[in-house]
Image 1 (cartoon, rainbow, N blue to C red):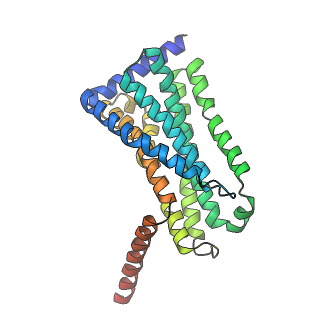
Image 2: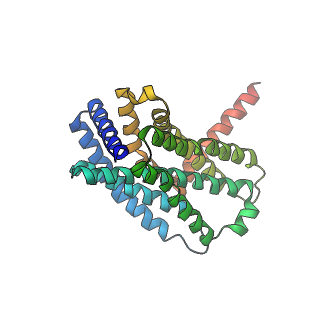
Image 3: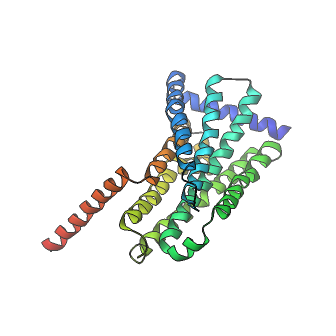
Length: 282
């Protein structure tokens, strides 16, 4: 009970520090805009991707689960805007951080799936099944409970923040490895088309960029005690985390063929032209 009360006090402190950095009216408007734009688009994206999960097409499964975790984050934002009883607010607060941890896990799964598609295309083609993908998704949904349940019942706040930071920090080297391994194996993957290669690299770069900009500040906030008492940094950290569901929608766009392929092709062509010009000038 003492640990739980202390967590409640700290939770109130985080909410207060966040409100002190962003005016309540601006915070309310921004949250409403994120909900009104992100929630319907996320539901449409889930429906669109679900129709593609057939004939062992496992690629959309991880992004679907990522978007489902975003739905939980939107639910917390709705509860926060509605300002219900503090107990309901606290429960959805833990659900929110549970969904944040799950979303990071599915980002790693997306990066891993893209890395295997380039580095080990033949091996992955014969071993990727919907059943295996669903088992991986179940594991990713269960793992965050290792953080949330002890935090809610037993663990002191300082220890729980360390556990939370470790959960978020472990994917960082993995995402860098997947991107580096993909770039290294890019030219050797003869069975993958050029458009697919560009899309895979674009997704991996985007995943790493989203993680670095939106989640890494929260890791610093959790590990560095001085950062927790810096009101400006605390406000910025929680503000960036709110935009992660919208950033995940960009991943959905990169999963689809069409305009993104043309954009990536034009960027690659510009890069190749600049390289050719530099070689000719030398």
